[in-house]
Length: 520
Image 1 (tube, rainbow, N blue to C red):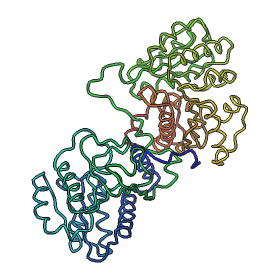
Image 2 (image 1 turned 180 degrees about the horizontal axis):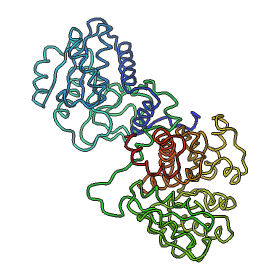
Image 3 (image 1 turned 90 degrees about the vertical axis):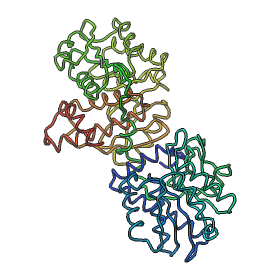
Image 4 (image 1 turned 60 degrees about the vertical axis):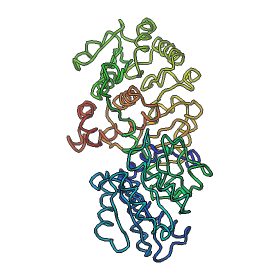
């Protein structure tokens, strides 16, 4: 599957992989340890650091600074001394991993490592005066001030420290090596919003970042080093994918700004399916969820919850008589789900096709599930390239495409067929099973959360509702599908542990917010 992965990566995706690795059982402290070790080894070889050589390490209070602490520790094992300058009080060190390594170097390794805390810009200026006679003894400067997420003007004393590093590089000919990214640069764009370190070398981790290029004003050379993020963190969906998609209301939000979801489904034979999906949107915390259904089951849906808003068309099945009213609701909605309990009547198929044409014209994002997947099998020309998620299980996938999939554990063979189908249709596929396979024709991921006890009625409707809820809160379809599949499976595991093996789809819905809190 490597062929479908970009050579470069965004800083957000690296954070997701870190989180996914931890979900797989690899502590973030291990990754920090690997980062510091590979960095130290590289600079020892590249700059011929020998016993009694000395380096100057500038560290911020984030994880880049934590990497710097680990680098100092590994350099000391080669009897290479360092002076570690912490920009800001130690109480502000953000992660437990960084705090642990600061405590080690500042209290136990004081023979080879000298530590200083620079609280303001005056301390940085005074440092320059103190080091005037020492600079020739340093072989290089390591920049671990800032990582990703740079926005706006850089605060003090970091701004003065960046100027100090650049001045030492220019006037004292001290090589500068940055940890992962030159401090002050946005690694996703290569832009410098205020000021940045000018690095002779950047040792970046896992993969190069999409905005960083060699032979520029701020970067002369880039080296990429592995820090032990397993391939499974990239292939299998984890907590990082979920957290990426979980949004929160802004302080000035008002009703209607945090997701408007429309569920179209139900028939005289099925009332529970659209109810489950709608209840998911309500429990997820969306501002408004409207369910459109045939009149025959409308009152049944209303009885599920006073929060249910139900619009109905007379009769037992949805048909073109409902088109005008549904079209108005489509304009209102941020995300639409069609299919739960819909039925396979010819008149319902006609309605579906006309709605798909409207979605295409209006560039709406939507999810097709259950009966809608069977009705659309002869209409892929309308569906192709739309902003949508299709959520078939293996049987529905065969009905849709006439493709027999290899068994779920044959990852390469099954993945290739699903990937090629998504690529051909130019949309997002979520193929449900013991392993969920998800792809948008560019990236393939698998989800392994869940349990056999989820093979009951309604869990697919919960999943479809989650996909739609994540889209409604302004996520792209593939991001939404990944987060929804992970959360749906986790909900099953959560209910099994809390309730026992005999739980229902409603149990999953009722425990949604507690499960989300656990994941956070």
